[in-house]
Image (cartoon, rainbow, N blue to C red; front, side, top):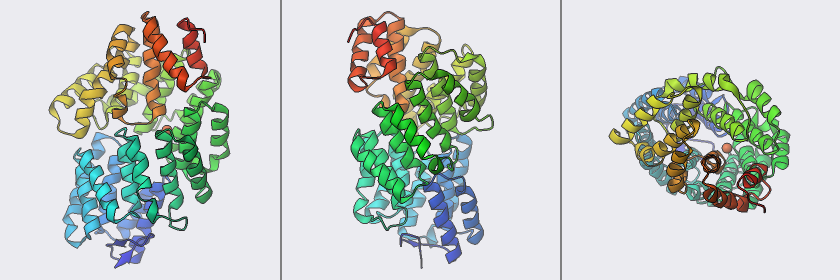
Length: 441
Ligand SMILES: [Fe+2]
């Protein structure tokens, strides 16, 4: 029997296959572009390795597009065909891959959690549980799924620094900022090429409204995150949010055109970063022009009927409607149909939060600010269910304040601004809204 780098038994034809698999996992944890080539090498060493097929299924799901969901299902089915040769832990992974690729995300998360009860060093299950809780908006489990395993991890365990990076992000999303900074620093000290940990610390600075410290951190750690796959754009996006906080609009626009925008990319996270950044620029009073929106919408249009994550669909609605009137109409119809007829876990969230949110962003674009307020105000404390981070979802809080002011609901605006000032007393954008709402202090 072979063992992986952390000593877990693993089914494989050779030590070479296990070594290639270990490298694939390391690349995945490091968010590196080498994950794909290493997985290919794993298959070359052992075409019938159950966990290689499972990982292939997972990787397709991580891409977040409908076309690859089909391929994920096929990879999971191939893994199932190898279940006879697999260990109990691996059979659970096969089940998780089947669940996830068929839209049963809750069952997939429960399966990863079940694997981790007996195998706290199964870092693949841990990273995927972390990912799953993140897109459920479940901050407590995002944090605790890592902390529940720490009893088994020591600084000498391979990948420890990646796990500390996950822990840092869990602390950040549950507002334990000092703990997040400590875990994030320890993570980067252990493994400097650690984009997720660097990103977690950037989040802390964003939430604490410390743009100077955040920009300095991201710049100082460039060698540790610019080696990432397209995730490097997301770290850059965080830096750009902080430049926005400092009112450096020209710089942000320039960074958008020269570094953030990737004409070739169709990665969902890139499309989200771009939409969110352009809309934030507009909420800061900047004219981003039509061309940037159109180029972005051209990419989103191909994903009109994807419905892989409501969080993605809502961002596509922003871009499609910004590019042209009724540009998001087909997407809204597809989301409605999906919510009403599909049994996937994401369909429930789409109906409950995704659709109202998508309608709200479209209404905002069309100047129907009353509708924005009436749609968002009742659900604003439920928006977290769409997943993503506090920083990403903050866009919707900004949108609601903007709509309140534009449709003359000044008292509601004052209430929301006052709330926001409680969290971000020095934030220039919030202070500007306060002045617009006639608040003095
Ligand atoms: Fe982020």
